[in-house]
Image 1 (spheres, rainbow, N blue to C red):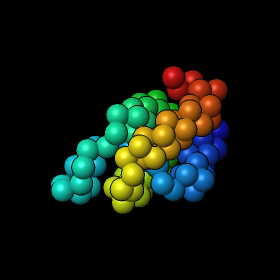
Image 2 (image 1 turned 180 degrees about the horizontal axis):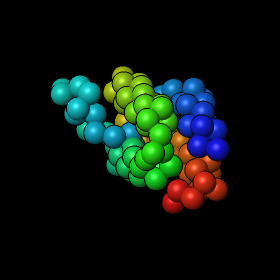
Image 3 (image 1 turned 135 degrees about the vertical axis):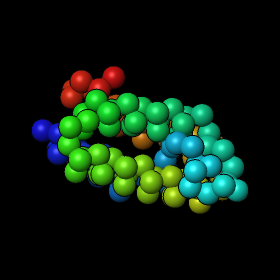
Image 4 (image 1 turned 45 degrees about the vertical axis):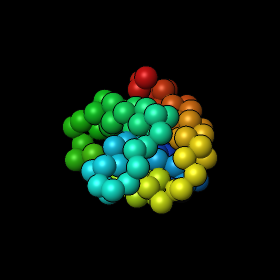
Length: 104
């Protein structure tokens, strides 16, 4: 069940390669801060990772890899308004995937 969730998260990244969220200062010190919708998305992803895969190292690695890849792609997006909208859209889609699994 949880592997299906992780697979869905990775597929979501493939569908929305120009979106991400989290503190991009960790990935690229000179990168501008992420728009608030992207940080909200990363925070949600972190909560779900903790809730859904706390006891599974493989799933933890998948969530971490997804987050890192998303951050790298987001840091390359120059249009902050487009990035913010993309993060909002992706967050809504991820919520639809993870909510049935108990992740609010």
